[in-house]
Every structure is written in structure tokens, then in C-alpha cells.
Amino acid sequence: MCGRFALTATPDQTAAFLGLAELEEFPARYNIAPTQPVLMALAGPPGMPGSNLPDRQPMLVRWGLIPAWVKDTREFPLLINARSEGAAQKASFKTAMRHRRALVPASGFYEWRQAGGRKGQPYWIRPRRGGLVAFAGLIETYAEPGGSEMDTGAILTTSANAALSHIHDRMPVVIGEQDFARWLDCRTQEPRDVADLLRPVEPDFFEAIPVSDLVNKVANTGPEIQERGEVEPEPQKVKRQKPGVDEDQMTLF
Image 1 (cartoon, rainbow, N blue to C red):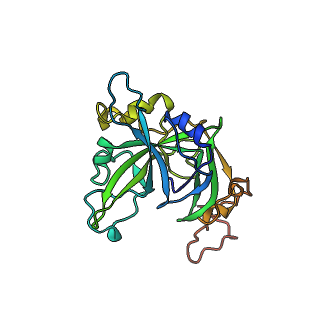
Image 2 (spheres, one colour; image 1 turned 135 degrees about the vertical axis):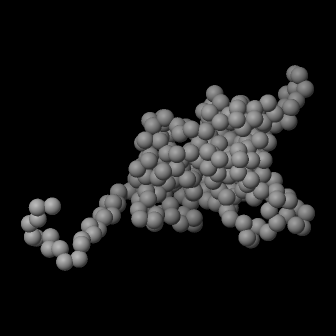
Image 3 (spheres, rainbow, N blue to C red; image 1 turned 90 degrees about the vertical axis):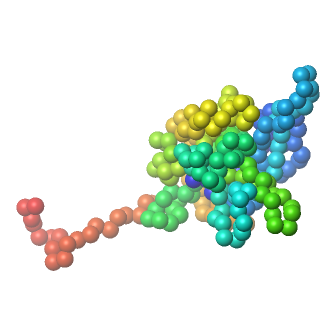
């Protein structure tokens, strides 16, 4: 899954990466968490021939998608991720998959090694060659009962590649720069036309750096949370023993 990520590039770097005309100033963010505003980019309105309108437009959305048909948000789960394998058919995501696909710029993401159902060792996972990466995102505008609207979003995930599967079995879908236009084109590209993009990135794309548990707390937002930390030993499995069996006794079986 993807439950925390970071965006530490400058607005100019992020705008150039996404193909945006410009971005307002924003600070580096080292620990972006669910329900917080996140930057996404989607295709802009079609322009006239020769128009100077940008092809893509930025949006700030609440991380946690709310489908338009939800009646009571208090009884609806927080959808920060969408499993790419079934997003085009799932009621919560199929409309966004068809009409509002987006790019989520990131400097990397955090993941925790699974350990008996609890969070274990945290890792900072970033592009091995540096720079930015774009996760596949979905946007849904939710109309609140009072009449106001709220833009919400989720990050698509896929099965982890061979390099990261020892940490977690899921990872964000990465959209390569050469595929930005096709992924964002919801006018001519239906979900089935971009299904081939919803795959794990190459094993050598990311590097995983063990970090301390500072990242566990949303209040910790400084660069120190990305500093390399000690790797916690994996918990040993307790060997189950049959009742009445003496381990010191020799056996033929």
C-alpha cells in the first residue's frame, strides 16, 4: 500500500516534471499523511488550435477518496489507496478511473516491513537515480450535504516488485514520463486502454533505506525522518512443540 509519502522538490522542479505552466510556492513536505491536502495533476480542458492553455492543471485534493454517491462520510472508510487490479469495476473507483485519472508527484514513499500483523521496520523508498516520480492517482469531487464541494483523491497500488516484496506485498503504481499523456487522457483512452500501465515498476527503479520510527508520528515533518536508521531484527518465529515431546530426546522421525 502507500500510507505516507514525501514531496521535497521545488515548485519549479515539480511543475517542469508534470508539464504544468506554473505552481504556487509550497514548502517541502517530508511526511504527507492521509486526510492532508496533496498535489495532483490532471488533463486540462481541451483548447482551441494554437491555444496557449496548459495541457495539464494542478489540483489540491484531500487524500482519501469519497465517491459522489456516499450519503454519510462518517460511516464510509478512508480510501487512500485503490487496488489497480479491480479499480475499473469497483463502485468506489470506476467513475474516477474513466473520467478523472491523475498524477501524484512524489520524491518517494514510506513503507513498513510486515511483522505479524503490526508495523515493523520503516523504510524510505525513493527513485534510485534521484528526482521525482509520479504515482497513478484518481480524483473524485464530493458534494457535501451543505452544498459545498470537496476534491478528494486516492493512489492506485499494484503488487510489489521483487526488490520490495520482502517489505510489503503492495506498492504504488508508477507512471513513466513517456506515459503521462496517455494516462491522463480520459477523453479518448478508456480504462481498458491504459490497463497495461498498472503494473509494478522495474525492480531496480527504487532503493529502500531503513529509517527510524520518527516517521510513524504525523507530527514529525522534518528531513530527519529520512535519515538512515538501524535495521530492526525480524521477529523470530516461535517453534510449536507437540505436547509431551522432549526436544533433547533423539527421534527417528
